[in-house]
Amino acid sequence: MADQYNADEIALANEFDAIRRNYGKPGVVEHYLKAHKLLWPEDGQHRWLVLGLTRICENKVTCFLGAASTNKTYIFTVHALINFWVFPHTSLAILSTTDIISLERKVWGRLKKMFNRGRERFPWLEGFVLDSKRQITPDNINGKNEVARTLDHGIGTVACVSGGRFVGMGKFQGSKPPNSPGKNDGIMVHYGDEAAVMESSFLDAYANWMVNDGFKGVMGGNPTDISDPLCTAAEPKGGWDSFVDTGKTQEWTSRWYDAHVVAFDGRDTPNNDEPKNRYPYLITQKFIDLMASTHGVDSWQYFQQAIGKPSKNMVSNRVITIGLCEKHKAFDYVAWKGTSRTKIYALDPAYGGGDRCVGGECEYGEDKDGNQIFAVGSPEIIPIRLNDSLDAESQIATFIFNQHKRLNISPENIFYDSFGRGTLGAAFAKLFGFNCPVPVDSGARPTDRPVRFDLFVDEKNGMKRLKMCNEHYSKFVTEMWYSTREAIESNQVRNLPMNVAQEGQLRLFKTVMGNKIEVESKDDMKERVKKSPDLYDWFAVALEGARRLGFKIERIGREVASSKQEEDWFDKEAKEWHDAIHAGLLTH
View 1 (cartoon, helix red, strand yellow):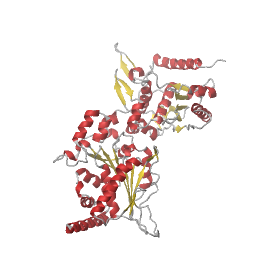
View 2 (tube, one colour):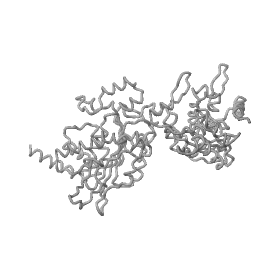
View 3 (spheres, one colour):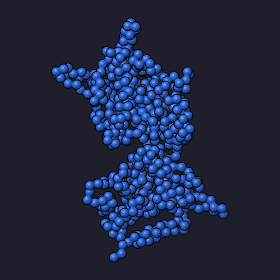
View 4 (cartoon, helix red, strand yellow):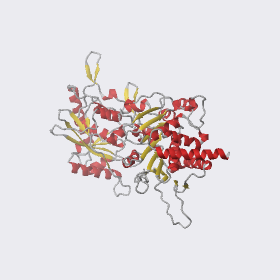
């Protein structure tokens, strides 16, 4: 037994030496796999482990999408520990997850267990566990404290959520590969667990890290939505619109730093290979069938937990996608004709509770080709101070009044969502007087305006007429949101900020009774993605304001229909607004 153990020690030392000499070169993964088999022989090596380790070794950035129990965290841990033992003084591994509880139960807990198991077989392996700091370092300190222990190498962990707030990677953002004195031999790897449920700013740390030759990035999780950080990093070159699910484990190159993406599909579990169910820690067909019977095969729960890829509905049944915006030039800058343009200001008010109060300026006019274009401005978060002497409504009204003066935008061109905000109108009246910002009731019924000025329906008498919004949409909030898509697809939107578009693609839609379109409720969306699309709500209010002032949605290249009915609608809308203002006036 002693001879066998000594043979294993020699074999492991040889594999470590081979990794040290061939790090970053083709084929080095074979030495990682041999080292894994020596360190943790009881764990087995299924094809997902082999694939995952191979792709980490081959690529600078690797993204793992996957169903539940697809060994994503385990693969991270194997690579991190082997790197630590091979390069104890010239490597830094950063393992991040959501909160402290997840850190203890998953990342840090698993790391300690596997570290201990490796040390039990090979006691000579380096490392001191600092449980209070949740780090492993190769440095010891002597009894006289004559030698300082540094923590810029080894393995460190970070919880990105603290006290219910996302604090991100700030603790490690300035970290660099720990080079030997006078050399450039250091390596650094970030392993991001549960990346799908991070804030979008989670990805920002990579801008600093990617410039280092010795850096690698690995992240993984269960996709929740194509706009979550994991799916943002894993988005195919052609956009999620181009993605085709094969029903098997898939790989592709993403548009984010050319990351290599591996999607571990639960339906393709190694537990379905012969002999079956060899790996009790991996997803099983029984679990997949249970998710299907409980939630249905079209549910987001089934795709998130049982498949591990974005569903077709995640891509096709949403109001917009980034790919749609790119295709129709919504992110491009507009070249104006030089004639006068109409400026508007929009407000999506909020008084707290997690939602943001958003305002901002937009404008529309003719581009150099004579097409009517809506240019989106930059949204601004309006601060609401709880300890202010003014209540929330008065703070918002004061902010908007100051913007009205600064930007020289008349109150008739300022629009705000008034649904559930009845007292905000009174706050505006105190500052603006008779001429107040215009309320937009997102809880109202859809209007009898044209959906587009080139979308027709056939009448029984053989004539055609424009299709009205109350025939096309189930609710006015759907009309507001989906009209933004109609404008984008008509090539009429420019300067759209990326953060606005990323929030816009959060919201799904469906077809309901009467073949009408309906966006999912705000509550359902928040439960699904844990976010509120306040920036896109603002954009929807802004476009609604522009439509009320005369902006017409039409496919560029087609002629706008002309009829008395269209003219009558604008006259009717103006009269209703005028009557509503007069009805709300105070009399002395």
